[in-house]
Length: 239
Ligand SMILES: Nc1ncnc2c1ncn2[C@@H]1O[C@H](COP(=O)(O)OP(=O)(O)OP(=O)(O)O)[C@@H](O)[C@H]1O
Ligand SMILES: [Mg+2]
Image 1 (cartoon, rainbow, N blue to C red):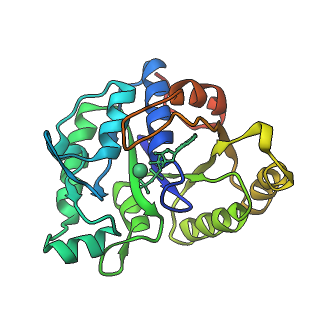
Image 2: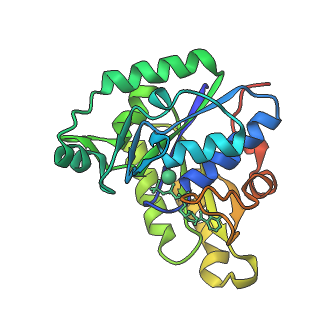
């Protein structure tokens, strides 16, 4: 086991927040962890050039320093699925380039957290999807899901598809849980998801209004991940 591919039931579910929280805690636990966002879309020009907001956020939260060109080899401007963002901008996505960057990061780190873009069936090139990338990198997937109504369906679909593609599903992390507002859906979802998917919910991360990836505000993500993730349920290498 040398890492996780972090996917989600949708875009905006908190993959980056969870990746950052995981990375920071794994580092605190003595693991030499790296992060990667192979395909970043919606990537605007900044004073530092075109950076991957997601990778930058996770690296800042966890205190990781790697060159942006290997952490995020493709940074495309349109906020769309990578395939369409590449087609619009005339960029050619080469999976070899992503593999090479990943190998370089593996030489620098013992454990990798690789964040996909959007959900597991988001297209990269032609019919090559995010699931194919997880497979290419040889990583089990962690699925980030919302807590509320609708998440049972989205999570089970993601688990079933990942399994059908031969991927190992390491766990599900519920992100943005509001204890004080949890209704019947939030309270019954977890058991239902675990029972029907056969995959453990390995963490429940609380809602924190201060977390904002776009403005690099980590809020309490490191603390919330520390408290919310059931670390014994995550299959991790000994540090
Ligand atoms: N635990 C949380 N509590 C409150 N808000 C959160 C939490 N996690 C994420 N958010 C909010 O949701 C936004 C989107 O989260 P995030 O960028 O992590 O999603 P994502 O799945 O990585 O999205 P993308 O598909 O664009 O990569 C964050 O900027 C933040 O505002
Ligand atoms: Mg993200």
